[in-house]
Length: 325
Image (cartoon, rainbow, N blue to C red; front, side, top):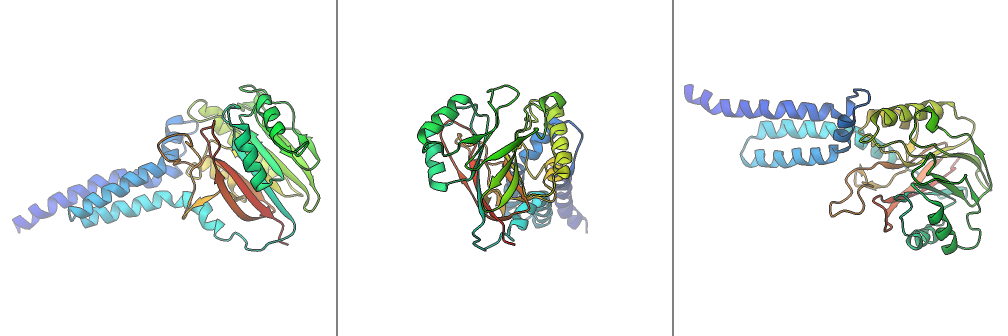
C-alpha cells in the first residue's frame, strides 16, 4: 500500500502542476482587466501558448502520465474555442454564386512601404470593388494609381497623413458619399476611421469603414476605448449592409474584439479550423496571429483568401461577399 502511494504521488503532483497553468490558459481569452497591454499581448499569443501546451502533452504522454496529459489537452482546447468560433460560424459560408457580388481588399500597407507593383498585381488578379488600405501614404497611392488602369479607383476618402490622425483610405470603383468617421482621434482613437456609403450598381448602398485601432502594446487605453466606441457605432448603423475592414490589432481571443464582432460575419481567411494568421508576414516565423479582419453584416460570405506583398509586415485579405436573398 505504501509503495502504491509512492507511485501515485508523482502523478498527482504533475496533475496539479499542469492544472494551474492549464486553467489559466483556458481562462485567458475571457479575462478583461481594462487597459492591460500585457494581458492583450498574452491573448494575441494564445495560438503559440496552446501549441506549447500541446508539446507538453506529448512529453507527458511519452512519460505515461496520461491523466495530466489529457487534462492539459482539454484545457488547451478550451482556450482555443473563442478563436475557433468565427471559423465554426464560417462553415456556413454560402455556396451560392449570385450575380450581386462584392469583393473587398484590405491591407495594412506598412506605413506606405508596401510595394505598389505587387499590390497592383493582386488588385488586377482579384478585381476588388473596394480597397481599404491602412498605414497608407499619398506616395503609395500615387504609385498604385500609376500601376492600375486609368481612374480604376477614382473614388476615395480624404487625404491621408502617414503617422498622423488619418492613415487609412477607402478606394472604390463606384461612387460614394463620405460620412463622418466611425471614431475620431479627438475622442481618444489613435487614428480616425473613415466611412463611405458606396452606391454599388448591383447591391445598392452599403457602408464601409476602415479600421485601425492603436496597438495594445503602445496605447492600451486607446485600444480598449476605440474598440468600445466602434462597438457602439456599429450598433447605430442600420438600413444597409455594413463592412468593417482593416487592421483591428485584435483577435477573437480578445473579449473586446468579440464584443465588436458580435452579430457580424468574419470574412477572414481560414487555415483549417482556425483563422489564418496575418502578422507577422515578413519574418522567418510564420504569421501566428490574425489581427486583420473583414467583418460584414447584411451580406453572405462566399470566400476569403490571404495575400502577401513585399514592404509590409501584414498579410492582406481579399474577401468575397454577396447578397443571396
